[in-house]
Image (cartoon, rainbow, N blue to C red):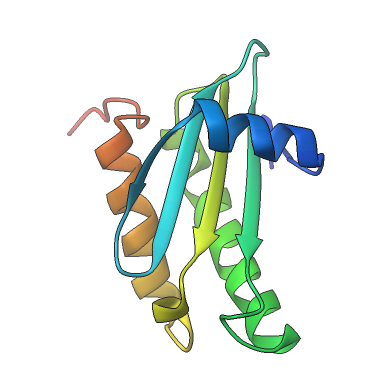
Length: 116
């Protein structure tokens, strides 16, 4: 990740849950909160209800990869927490990426892309 880091602290997650704004679709839930630093922090949460450790880790990797490949499109200075829903189990990268970008557009955290 270029200008991002992982969110690991439980207090950071709780802060985003309580003070951030959330949107959801059938696969993911996304909470977003402005932070006072110059880069983004991404936190990913996958519950045991979604599946066993193999399934949970695969979803985590898909979400992280979706963010990494689209990182240049995001505004900076955000705390982003993504929660995988049970419906995301067994989905491929394209479906997860589409759901991730859909929620990002709903939050209006994408930079205006110049169309050429």
